[in-house]
Amino acid sequence: MKVAIVHYWWLSNRGGEAVVAAIAELYPEADLFVHVCDEALVRQTLGAGFKGKVITTFIARLPGATKHYQKYLPLMPVALEQLDLTAYDLVISSESGPAKGVVTRPDALHVCYCHSPMRYVWDMYPAYLSGAGRVVRALFPWVAHWLRVWDRASADRVDHFVANSSFVASRIRKFYRREAEVVFPPVNVTAFDHRRERGDFYLCLGQLVPYKRADMVVEVFNRLGLPLVVIGEGELFERLKAIAGPNVQLMGRQPFGVVKDKLETCKALVFPGLEDFGIVPVEAMASGAPVIAYGKGGALDTIVHGQTGVLFDEQSNEALERAVRACEAGEHRFDVEALRKHASGFDKRIFQHRFLQAVARALDAQNTPPLRLSEEGA
Image (cartoon, rainbow, N blue to C red; front, top):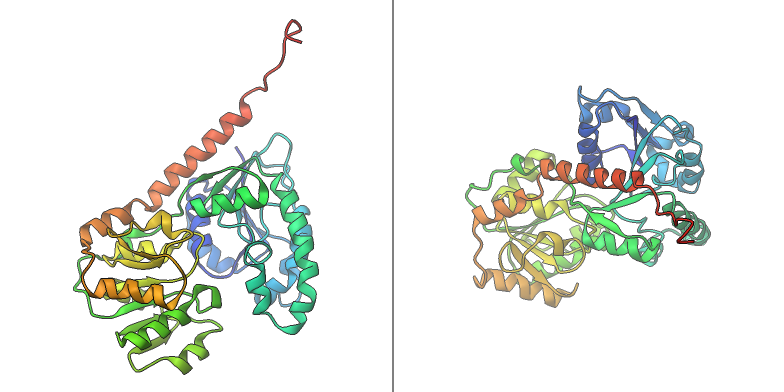
């Protein structure tokens, strides 16, 4: 089969790019289509084993696209539909921004690995709009309406949906009225050492944006007076800097070596946001650290309450404080070997095996002839 992989944009390496890299290992001759990318980074990430071409949409040729690509969001559906994919038998789209809306041959198979339906036009639209500037608040409702109509229509172009979590599968069911097979994304479990001596500090790691609720973590640890390390950058950084007590260390963005060290030595990871899946909690468990997490969304697929972490049931300071106090009081005992074993279930090889199985099932379904009534039955 001739294979195409369609991703939204590739300007940094995050969870979505890790998924595409793992898929590209399975199909090293595939061509990669993106709206805009840093091709040197893409090829460095995919390595010498990747033999395909990297092809961008017309978005990449617009002024300032590599820095301001999100401003061209309303044009991305049109850009996708201009791609000529008639040569490809299998199209794999990686959906979180606009990617699945490509037009394929009638006999081609289109499998969409969905990290999430576009959150900023669906369930997180109010939160996104409330944090936007005045111009965006005036214009985006019209853009979002158009994107919702297109997003729902383009879902019908997909033959088989694969979701990265049960939570995302429920979003796909709600917004697209389609069922999705769940295949958890790959996590580089072997990159972490779970046998190091643990420190006395808690860790909050991730983008400092409102929905991830790092502000709630800082407020709770200010009250408790317990050591907290915060790693990440984003629009909340200055606010957190203003409210952080002397027990809170704000480190900003850090290279992987520092992140790895903190995961391997923290007392626990605090993960208060509502996430589609959440790779960081799995990395923490691979490092031997339990996770204190909000018990909704992707955390329900990755954390076992009382065994690999503590789940709190509402995004409030009081609920988070109760969970931290339970850990401090020793109400839960965590075994580092058990944490590591649990995390190993999300290893890249397991992802690749399950994704290949999903594609094989979709191919079988596509090649199964439709039932026809005989003349007698008619």
